[in-house]
Length: 262
Image (cartoon, rainbow, N blue to C red; front, side, top):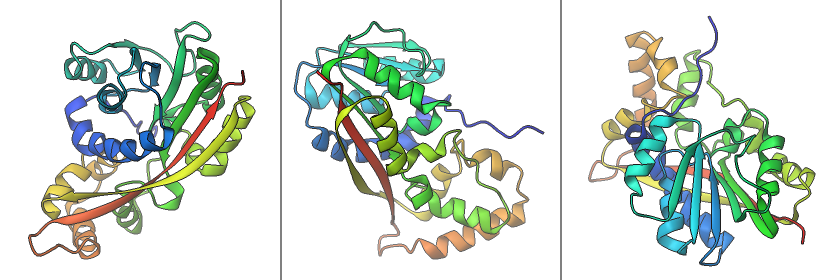
């Protein structure tokens, strides 16, 4: 059988699984990026609009155009940002429907490892920003254990359940990101690591959310109930609860920024 594909087609489920994580990392990322108000932004792989909303709330953009391959995610994003200076459309990160030098900034938030051909995606971002414009991204450090649900995937692997990787997982490495930005001809390139934590009300709350992820759900669906219980038991031991029953998980993202030459 062909391997399962990673797809995000449910905006509400994505919000719990990854949207909240995205905003935690996005806060630090936007502080580091330090954009000006009044920019025109292209949010590539905007999903359900979690990061798009942060741009609108924090940086008073003149316009944000979000593009994503999921119609369902875009429907959620349109509802979320109704009335904001945002336009959403269905499209491909490697063939953006925008004219050259149309934007002040192009950004990918937790997206580049899903782009089948990352060099094309970065080249497209560089093409659509004006001279001096910003091109940036952040991505979970997948191979460094930075994925928010990495502990669950480790316990699944211990049960012989192979990880389901994004198509361009290697692009999440900090050295790979730097090479992509350099090869696109961008300048003033800088990188940083972003560490975040998220608290869940209980282990059961964490488990309910974690098992819905498109990298995880297809694998668990094929796992016998005894195997799932073993995973839960081992995972619970690795996530000790606080006095109130809550648990706190950590994640880490690699971030990069650069400019189109003037």
